[in-house]
Image (cartoon, rainbow, N blue to C red; front, side):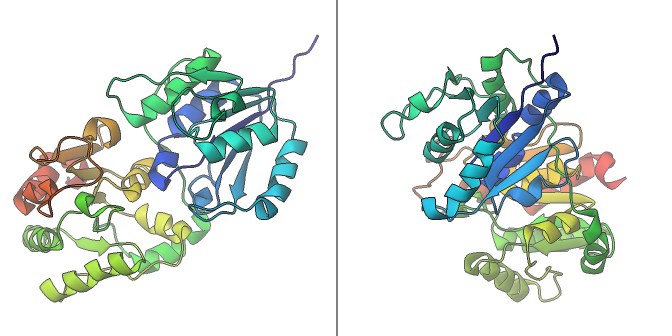
Length: 340
């Protein structure tokens, strides 16, 4: 009797970086179920991160706006997913949105986290739940631990993996003609941003040391204000213009010689593309979020007066400010894998 391999749907409805940190767990699914169809459902703005991974069967992009949901908009997609008749689903975020979608899509075996919070009855959306551990561990390892609910082994590697669109290579060359030290000034939270004056100091030190440095940021008003501040401090500093979409940003990022940033989504993009990284950590835990592997290093600020792991600081003198430009340059020079 032939047993058909299970058809699997993975869900992740969180931020950009959280989605990339899921890739080691997705590889476990592929390695353990090599003949299975493995589909991925996530928000539309995150979908370009996964569209060119050859070992995923299909990406389902859910149109949505953060903080709101419209059944009229999402129901046609839910119906299409129900017609796929998945055997299993695994929800790596297990938030309210993912729980409801897991239930509506209707796979017989639905795996999620056993966590408190959310709407009343959220836990009943899953047929199998895994209690998260309390120990501090790399986020990709924590996400992969959810698969213990199906008795699957941990990942052979915790390195992240995404792909850029190869058809955008020429456009990326025009924007970034040669490999450089690419510095991303923005972060989702101000306390995770290295001050622009520090970036300006680093630019002067790095260029004096013979390094080619280019800056980038996001397209929002707050992020573009960082560009304006940098130009005021260093008029000749090269800053990339706002890029039109995530796909072209990935194609440009892939060309970097090394990527420097705070704890932010593009840090995980770079790691997933195989670009060496130097990350700057203030209030968040590098043990949880700094990329792993010989290509990657991090610098940790002195202890945050607000306490470790805080998303909101009680002071405007953020602890990340204590990392100096000299320390960042020294961090680059220590690893000849990057600059040799």
